Image (cartoon, rainbow, N blue to C red; front, top):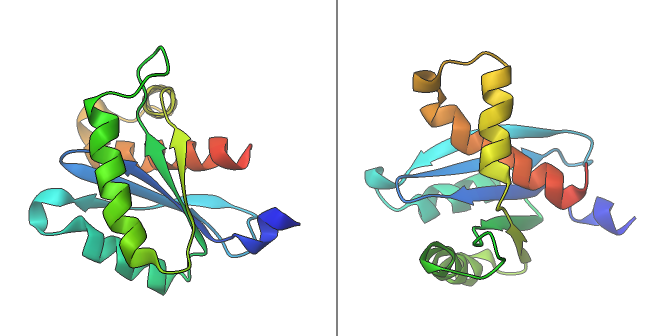
Length: 140
């Protein structure tokens, strides 16, 4: 199927301070958290490009934070800028934007339901949000 050809997929939840990453395996059977990249410790793009190479990622999905009415604001502008730079480094790998309006909320709720304490959530929440983007994107 066409989906098979694009795995592994890397999903990116872009934030000011941290970027959460999640990926499918090469067969598109499972999706799992990868890591949280700290933007304050240098250029996050370098690490992301490394991960893409390591995991032989074949397509990338970037969460686009739309306003509740579906319009784009300042945060989507930042994400699109980041996406443009990323695309220039991706070569043949396609990049898709995906509406992530509800994913961070869903991720928080799921984590809370799993009984994780809020203060331990910081690093996990970004990966969980990326995982939600990925699952929604694939349609799981």
